[in-house]
Amino acid sequence: MAARKIVITSGKGGVGKTTVTAGLGYALAAAGFGVILVDADVGLNNLDVALGVEDRKLYDFSDILESRCRPGQALIRCGERDLFVLSSGAETPAMTAQAFRGVIESLATSCDFIFIDCPAGIENGFHRAVSAADEAVVVTNPAVSAIRDADKVLSLLTGYTLSSVGIAINRINGGKVLSGEMMSAADIARLLRRPTLGIIPEDAEILLGKTPAHNGRSEADEAFGAFADNIASRRARPYDYLSAHRGFRGFFRRRA
Image: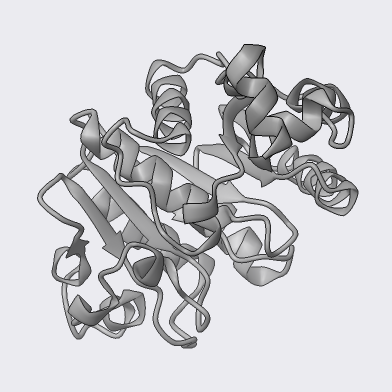
């Protein structure tokens, strides 16, 4: 069976799309799935950096298109799990939408999931990435500007033949939601009118550029695990990001 090809996009830069892609990839690989993460941000790629494997890169996407290597040779294994990343490389005339789709299709028989980390904005790179996917996840956060941009991207995605489109809400703070300082995930979902596949709480480790280790010890690990389960099962059961902020312990956590 061919891999499910899912583009992770946002429209607006800075919402944590690449970190979400990396965290989701780790969680699915930890669950036993074969996962390939493709960096589609040509020239500004940093997915391999987020995964901590940038020093192991021998080839990238542009090398494949210029026939300097085969697609499988450009994949970088991330740890001992069945998780790989393909760096984008430099811009080249050979990087057409058709060629991009061809490489993605050639990899689709070797794994369960291919996630395409889409570049920010809605220019050629966006359309090239989306054209290679069958499904889409739009990442946003509680900022009004991010929600507005996510809405614009969702409108653009209606022009593509995608079997499913959902949203992931990143950097949400349960304490601020309960105190009325931040919009809730439910409010964002109502505004965007799409199923919520992932809710990732604000996490100091992630803000410092660290990808969750998925050992089940942190709130981010649990959130990415729930996100991965939704993707794998094609469900939309949002993670309860408010539970850690309720009750006696939650009271002192909010005041900290």
